[in-house]
Amino acid sequence: MSSDSPVPPSSGPWTLLVHGGAGAMTRDLLTAEQDATARAGLNAALDAGVAELERSGSALDAVEAAVRVLEDDPHFNAGRGAVFTYEGRIELDAAIMDGSSRDAGAVAGVTTTRNPVGLARAVMEKSPHVLLSREGADRFAVEQGVEQVEQDYFMTAERRRQLEELKARPDGSYYDVDMKYGTVGAVALDAQGHVAAATSTGGLTGKRWARIGDSPLIGAGTYADDRGCAVSATGAGEFFIRVGVGHEIAARVRMMGETPDEAARAVFGEIAAMGGVGGVIVAAPGGGTAIHFNTPGLYRGKATSDGERQVAIYGDE
Ligand code: ASP
Image 1: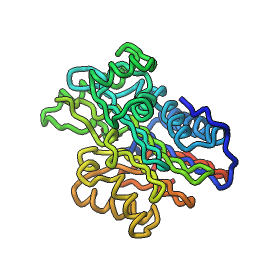
Image 2: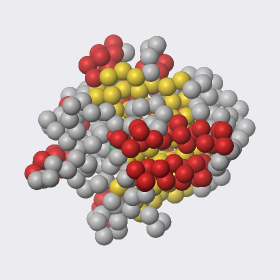
Image 3: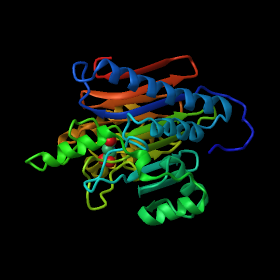
Image 4: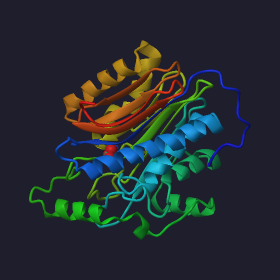
């Protein structure tokens, strides 16, 4: 999973941001246990990413490591604990992008890979392509020796309940029943001044017709460019695809000289005007960051080489 290159000399500060999905999280909606397990998961993801920033010094390694932890955590909608499709299956999407080279890899609708973000990285490094999907991506995973699991591994009782609740709705409403999206992602700036982004998700509860969201689409839910910034998004993917959120934020930083926060706010203005909800995390060379969301909450965490460390869930913290 990690690059074998020797640790380069550190020169600048590093930053790591993670998210575990945007949604309707408020203090009265989450139980104390849900609050605590989410914070523990975000902290574990930060620990894994920081360890890579200190070990290999690579933003790319850091975002992959952080996302792997959240994929393995059944409380988030990625890897184990992913949401169910309408047919009661698990179909996973993920992407990773290296801002120094703008190399990128992504997978959509994979069904047996334990850590889709690792498979996305294999697509980036071991195939001539950027995006592989469904059976082909599953075959590529086997060929590459990427760890495979049974579908049962991903399935949790709570996600099955959410699918049943959605199917019982008279209005056929499509977006997640409890509006907690739960997609996971990470962005990082390493000490060499390179940024990277990764995102992983089960998509939306009850998705059908091989629906693909924004997460595995380079430029939508995931983007990284050292000339601009790295972005990972969560929310109602159909809006994020149409706005091209990741690329749009990076392009505004690169070409208009906006800060990550200014760019994220401007792009979220567009998302909101179209009726979309969600959140983004952004990290730029130079150290600028943004965490922006227009939902009541966003599972999120941040760690920096200056010793700043925080995890948060609600809009008022
Ligand atoms: N953005 C994801 C999608 O549309 C969902 C999420 O953020 O949880 O697939």
